[in-house]
Length: 207
Image (cartoon, rainbow, N blue to C red):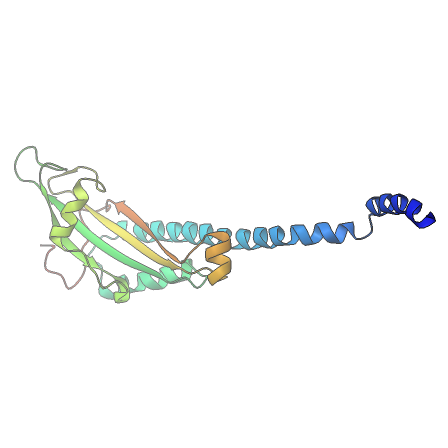
């Protein structure tokens, strides 16, 4: 009978006992802490890669815009070395440079969505990293969405970059827990050269 009378007291004492409480809370919060740590690392790497590639692409475009003469192939291929230097981190970056000018000899003498056409001067990928180079029919699609209106004879060039992002923590942690899969990020930068147009050695279109 005495043991039965002590049972409620023992039960109340068990409920008030806080031994091991921190360990239990730690076990509950540990998965969330691991997820937060992994997510911060991966998301930071994604935004760092995009930001770094964008700045490097604008640097390449600025270099090309300052060229006064036809750029030699050695110079064009050297741009890949500059890109690799400006984007350390193990994510390979590819470049494609496309130069063209507006051909609109009749009124309104403007290349836009409804008039004129683009004359391709060259499309080149330093060190042949990109095998799919632009053709003259393909660049006509840029008139409607990507290139501002150009006057007849006016020229611009486009620097496109493509970086193949691969999460440093692969498979389950990156794809399932954080929601970041391997992806390809790109930049599309339209630049007007400071001289009339940008030409590449070995091409016969800049005449």
